[in-house]
Image 1: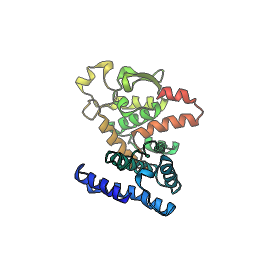
Image 2 (image 1 turned 30 degrees about the vertical axis):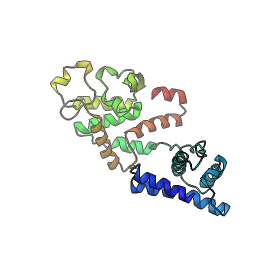
Image 3 (image 1 turned 60 degrees about the vertical axis):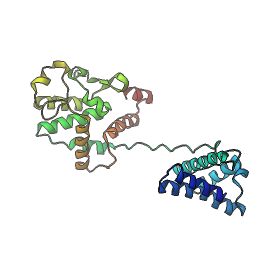
Image 4 (image 1 turned 135 degrees about the vertical axis):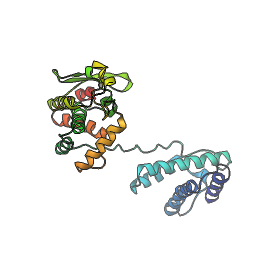
Amino acid sequence: MRSAIAQFLKYLATERNASDLTIKAYREDLFGLVDYLENTRGSVPHPDSLSPQDLRTYQAALQQADYARTTISRKLASLRSFYKFSMREGIAKNNPAKPLRNPRRQRKLPHVLTNDEVGRLLEAPPRNSAAGLRDRAILETMYSAGLRVSELVALRERDVDRDEQIIRVRGKGRKERISPLGSFAVKAIDAYARKRVRDPKTDSLGRDAPVFVNRFGRILTTRSVGRMLEKYIAKAELDARTSPHTLRHSFATHLLDRGADIRSVQELL
């Protein structure tokens, strides 16, 4: 086993031109199996004598030792590569690592703001400037309707129905949906509209004019919205993981917490 691993590592270095770090990772992964076999069997068998069941037992031992799922997947990938080489060189007849399945990746729950944290964020922009009123309206709209940043900057005046408190959203794949717009968001948009910077070219678009504009009166970019949000996240002293998408996750979570049907929430997103 050791000599076969040594041949494989030499092959990686000379024929595959693998980096030192890559070779080091393969060496640690493969000799991890060697150490396991020595400790459990008292000896290290020839690579050709190992079966898929032997490697499954090794995989189970890694899981019991609380190795991360990504680490176990990497070790299994190293074994598959080693056995492909061994079969090509006539060292092994079969690849016992091939039938092994990687452990399922653990899905992390999205970061969500509490109601109090959302309130602090929405109150962060100043009320005494056009930029502050715009930023407050942006945050209210994103949270109220669960919008992506790209959907927010694509909003046009004709998409906003203030009387019905709804907006038409153009989402991914040119799909359109109707989303609710809370009364606070409507009031914030109206307050901003009275103070917003005017640009003749933009105003000439009429109902096709963007709802939110930059300090020159032109259409906002997603990057500028992201920078704006970062500023208010820091001001409100929120978790550094908070991102534009956090407002979207918070919108959905708070609806579900208030008893909304999950299918209805999915349709709003």
